[in-house]
Image (tube, rainbow, N blue to C red; front, side):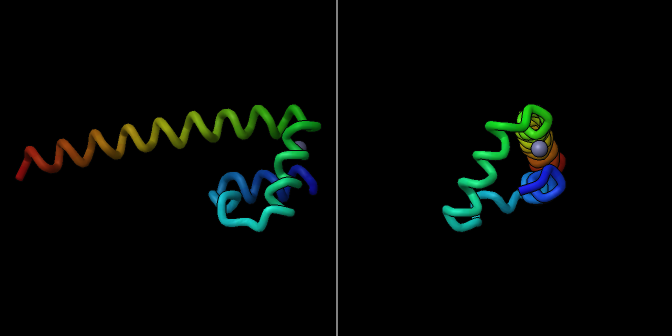
Length: 65
Ligand SMILES: [Zn+2]
């Protein structure tokens, strides 16, 4: 697996839906590649942040109605 493939799979959120073999190759890749490890970390932080923001918008929507 190359960095480009990993970044694509991670950023498109496809990793959980992959078969175990491809999922293990993504795990092996982040284990050996520190660039993708920090990319994954940032992507997880960003995903959590966006989810919080979404929840905030949703509650703002509710009170506006
Ligand atoms: Zn990489």
